[in-house]
Amino acid sequence: MPANTIRSAGRDTAKRMNRSDLCRRLVAKLNQEEAVVGGIGNSHFDLWASGQRPQNFYMLGSMGLAVPIAFGVALAQPQRQVFALEGDGSLLMQLGALGSVAKSAPKNLAIIVFDNGVYQITGAQPTLTSYGTDLVAIAKGAGLKQSVWAEDEAHYEELVDIALKGAGPWFIAARTDEQPPAGVTERDAAKIRTRFMQGLGAVRA
Image (spheres, rainbow, N blue to C red):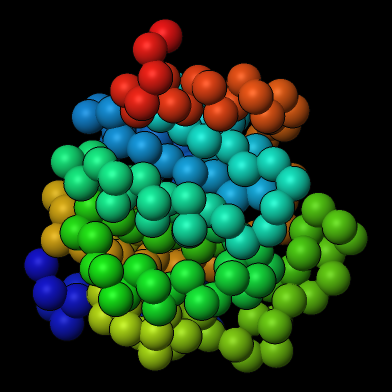
C-alpha cells in the first residue's frame, strides 16, 4: 500500500503511548517466525518482557545497531519479515543506516522507533527530538518514502499489519512516555546470539 494512502500524524499531534504496550501489540501479531531486533536498553527490555521468541535478538552494549542488524537479516533472508525496534537516542547514533536501507529497499523490513525524547536509561537527558528533530522527516529525507508517525494505538496496529504484508521498507515512529520497561533481559550475549541464529535456521539447535 503506497505511503500516500496511509494517514500520518504529525510528531507534535501524535499521542504519547506506552512502549511496553506497543511491544506487546507487535508480538501478538507475529505468527510466521518474523525476526525482531530490539535495540539497546528499553527497546529490547520491553521486547523481552512481551514474550521470548527464538527469532528475537536483544542488542547489548552498543547504540544504534538495531537497524543495521535487522537490515542484514532482511537481505540475507528475504522470505522472512524483519522488524527493528529502536529508541530515538540510539537511532540518532546511526542515521546513516537509513540511507543504506533506502538504497537497497528490502521489502521485508520495517523499522519501528520509540521516541520519548530522552536517553532514559542513563538519566533522562534530552535527545535532539526534544528540541524539534523529527525522525520521520529525517527518514523521508534519507529516501524512506514510507515513513509515518503513528497517531495512536489503533493506528500503530494498522501500520504493523501493513508492514507484515511486505511492500517495505517501512519506517514507523511512535511517541512514547517515560515509563520504565516491563522487564530486564538476561545479559548473556553468547546465549542471545546462538538462540537467534538457531531461530533463523542459520545454525542447528
